[in-house]
Length: 144
Image 1 (tube, rainbow, N blue to C red):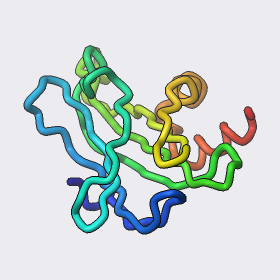
Image 2: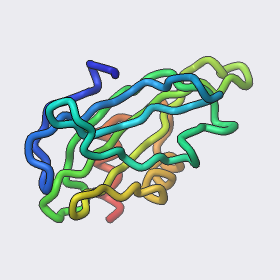
Image 3: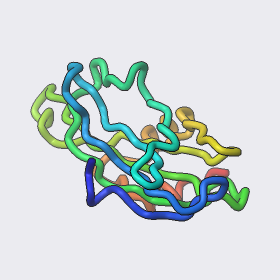
Image 4: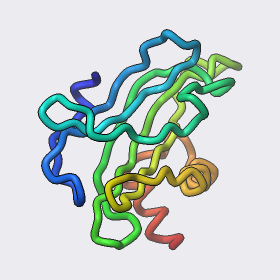
C-alpha cells in the first residue's frame, strides 16, 4: 500500500470507501502499481489494468504514484478518478528521470471504465514536465 496516495472518499454507487494505491510486488518483471476500493479492509473492486496482466512490457519500471484526483470529468455527476503514475524508462540519457503514465477511470454503474484513448491523447498533447491533475483537467475541458 502507498499511504500517501490512498484516500477515504465517498463515491457514487460505492458510498464511503478507501481508494488504495499499491506498489508492485515485483514478482513479475516490470509490474505496475494496482488500485483498489476497500471497505472494512475488504476489497470491493480492483481497477482495470492499463497494460495486459498489469505489466509494463517495454515501458519501464515503476517509480511512484505521483497524484490521485477524484473529479467529474465527463459531466455525468459521478466522480471519475485520474491517476498519474511515474516510471523509469531506463533508456537514453534521461532514462532515470521519472516519466508520467496516466490512468483515467470513468465511473459507470458499480464499476469503472479505463479510458485508454483519453489517457493516450493526454500523453500526446501535454509535455511530461507539465503533467499535473490541473493540466489534465484543463486539457479535457478544452477538448470536449
